Image 1 (cartoon, rainbow, N blue to C red):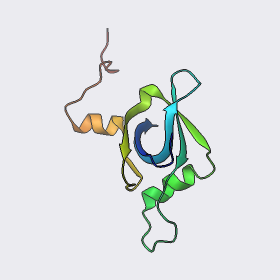
Image 2: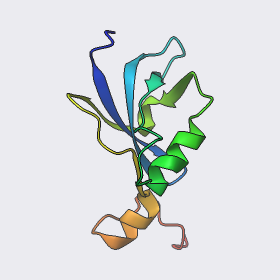
Image 3: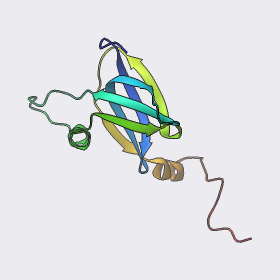
Image 4: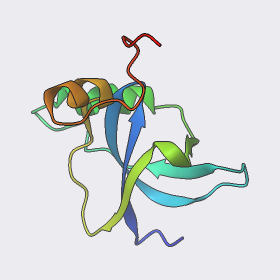
Length: 110
């Protein structure tokens, strides 16, 4: 992959939806995983600090590359410029708020 490319990767991690930016995204040698390398975050010297982006920066601070299971990837976009890294409400919170319901309800008896 070229350093000119920038990718926005949206995936599910522990019932939260992560939106991060990276320079390299490709199919991993580990079957069923996508490799994400060279994470891109905003400048640390800025006056305004986004707490969500700071949380993501600290979580991925010493990570060279991350292996994300393919079934947890929601979307990968090639973008022209970086936006803010974000964490959204996860699957369980989003499912209860909308018209989505579980295929395997745990409260029904056989």
